[in-house]
Image (cartoon, rainbow, N blue to C red; front, side, top):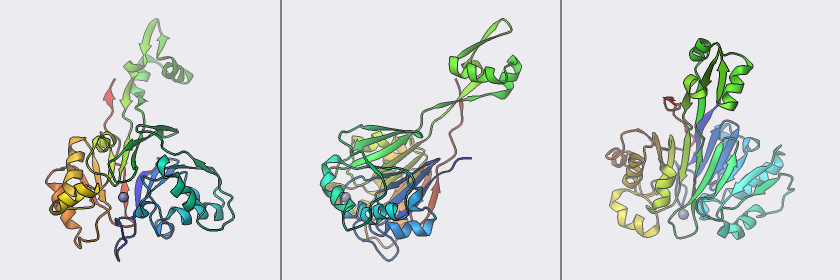
Length: 309
Ligand SMILES: [Zn+2]
């Protein structure tokens, strides 16, 4: 069975603390392994999780504030050091290309890794992956910022008992899938009669933003939503002013968007007790709630139940 899970590298906003590394996340999604927003120390955090630089297939950066990108130099150099065997795609806001170029060549190293640099130039831009569609949406923050979501298309699951009832087997199954119908025993059988929809899964990554349309667009029906929750309600005015979310806002978005597993992270160092984030989020969100801690792993929940076509 393929593996789909989030690996948390770090959970601190702005400055690391004794308990929390700078931001950083890895999404394992079948053969895609995507590194999101590597802050300082991400290379060493990776070491603790068992994800290696050579596992990475893609890097996504939401914006060029330090806690979301200062891990790029080390990670990029590590790709070359470890002779990563395939090209690694990199996405980031196009307006920050100057920062990216500097980080990429922050110091001298023997560059062997092939980076496929594909900046995000427009709201709603999509990248076609084998695993589905990676979409970037503009967020509201003092500098150009994009969140990302990975959307797997709905599939089709054949029902063996129905196929058997019609006497369809072997290569005929493939033909039925391809063509959409098949003539057997003087009768036309359609694909919908012998299959159910296999719902595609969705992962969303929302960092550093005030509440805006992009947040909702990304969160919509996400099986797993990772979202910043820098502040608590007591700092709501400050959060709005500096372009961040509170735990309550993030939880309301999740509830209104049909999110299944909600991961709150990117906590301000001013709060010593992370349980307060859970308390505030619980007032709005009844689903699976995770207050992210460094080095934890969060599985993408099992696929939604297949529905008749
Ligand atoms: Zn920021």
